[in-house]
Length: 73
Image (tube, rainbow, N blue to C red; front, top):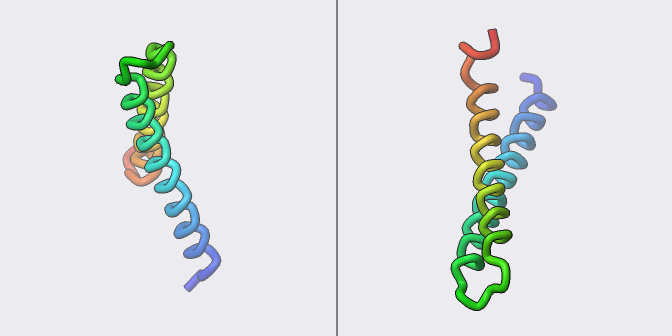
C-alpha cells in the first residue's frame, strides 16, 4: 500500500471539508448580521454572505467533478 498517497488524500479531504464548512458558516453568519435592523450597510454584508455561499457551491461542484470519472476521461 502507498501510505504517502493515502495520507495525501486524507489531508486533502480534511482541508477541503474544513473550507466548505467555514465558507458555509461564514455565509450563515453574514446573513444573520445583515438581517439585524441596526446595521448601517446590510447590503454589503448580504453580498458577502452570497459570495460565501457561491464559493461553497463551487467547491462542492469541483469536488464532484474530480470524483465522478465520467467528467475526467
